[in-house]
Image (cartoon, rainbow, N blue to C red):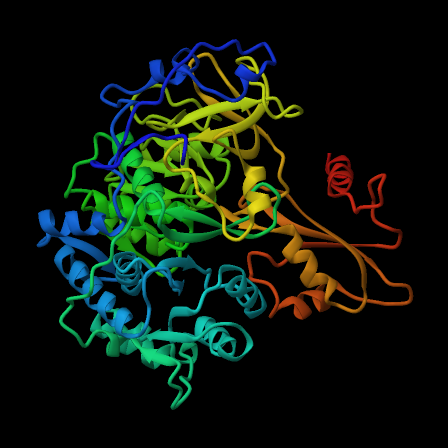
Length: 594
C-alpha cells in the first residue's frame, strides 16, 4: 500500500496524483501508471457515487463498535431462528476477546476459524480483531491432510471449532501431528434455538463428535465467556497490522496465504457501502447462505452487513428449499450468492411457490456469471442481478456492475471507488494495451493485499509497480466496463470455490498404482467447472475410478474430488521440456467434446 498516500491523523486515503501519459509508447514513463484521462469508468458511475470518495481505514472491529453504538437494540444476527441484537453481538465479542487474552492469545497470534456459519463465527471474528490476533480461515470440509498443511503454512497455533465430527475429528489429531497448540471448542447444538437444539441432539446425534477427556489443550467456549468483557485494548495500525490470512491460489494455482490488513478489509467494506448507495442503514436484511470463511461472503455479508447494521440471516450451509423459505418468511432484501446458487434457483421447478419479491440487491461473485443465468434469474424474480469481480488478494471486490445505470451482461462492471484498473500487455508485463484490446487485468487500490505470507518471491511476482497482477485476461470498453475473456492461471472454480489442481494431483499421486496425473477444470453448466483427472497407471497395475475415489476420501474435500476420471494407456501429453501439459490435455478434451 506504499503507493496510496494516507493521512495518518485521520486514517483516510487521499486522491492519487495525476500526470500525462502516452499509452502506445513503451517508455519508462509508460510503466503501469493510471491517470485521470485513463479512467473512463468515472463517466459511467451511478449518480451519487464518487470515485474519489474518502475511505475511512480503521480497525475491523470498529465496524461492530460503530453499529452496536448506533443500533444496539436492533436485531443483528439470526441463526435458524435464534436472534441476537447488535448490542449482544458486541458484548459476546468483548467477553470472548478477554477470554482469548486469558487463554494466552495476544496481538499477532494466528488463530484459525474452523467453523460453519453460526453465531460463534461472528463473535470470534470480531473478538480476534479486537485483540490484534490474525484470523486464519479454514474450510470445515478440508481433509485432515490439507488442514495439517495449511496450519503449518499459516503458522496457526490455535483453532476455534465446533463439536461436530466433520470438524473436531480432524482437528484433535492435529494437536499431535502439527504445530497446533490448542482447540477452543464450541457446542453447536447450544447455538440453535432451544427446541431445535434438543431435536438436533436426539435425531442427529450421530453428527456430534466425542470430546476427548482431560486434555488441557482443549478449552471450552463457555469457559472463555466467564468474565466481565473488559479485555485489554491493543494498539492497531490499520495500514500495516494483519487482520486476516486468507488462502488463495494466487496467480499460480498454488495455495498460499494472502496477508490482508485491517485497512484492506475496512476499505473494501466501505467501497461496497458506497456502491450500494440505496441501501438503508439499519433497515436491510441480508441472506448469509455463503460460508463466511469464503472471502466474498466475509466482505459482502459479514463485514458489509455489520457496517450497514443489516440483519444477517445465516444458515450453516446452503440448502435450496431452506434458502427460499428464509427469503420469503423474513423478506430478505440483499442476496449475495455464487452463480451455482442462482442456477439452482432458476432450475427449481417449485420456485414459483416462493415469494422472492422482497429482494432488492443480488450480487454474484466467486465465479463468472453466465449471461443466460443472469437473464433467467432476473426474468424469474424481477430482481436485477449484478455481477462483480474480485480476488482474495483484493479483499476481494474490485469491480461491480452498477445497480442504477447500465448493467452490461457478460461484464464484471466498473472499478469500485479509489480502485484503479490497468490492462497490461501479456508479454512485456508493463505497457498498457489500447481500449478494447486484451491485456492482463491489474488492480491498484486500498483493498489490495500486503503480500503472501512468508512468500517473498510470489509476492514480488504478483505485486509489481504498485499493481496486483491477477492472471486474468480482460478487455475494457470505452465506457470503462471490464470484460474477462480468458484466464492465465490454472485455478479451478467450482460452485464459486477455488480448487487447486496441484493439491488434487498430489493426493492422487499418493496411490501406488499412479504413474502420471493431470488435473484440470472442465466446463459444467450447474457448477461452472468441475474437477477432472487424467491418469496413466504404472505398467501391470489396475485401478478403477470408484476405487480411486475411495482412496481419496480422507485426502480431499468433496469439492476437490474428481467428478470425472479418465485412465489412459499411453503417456500424458508433455511440453518440450518434459513437463506434463495441462494446456494440451484441455485442448484434447475440447476437441473431443466439440
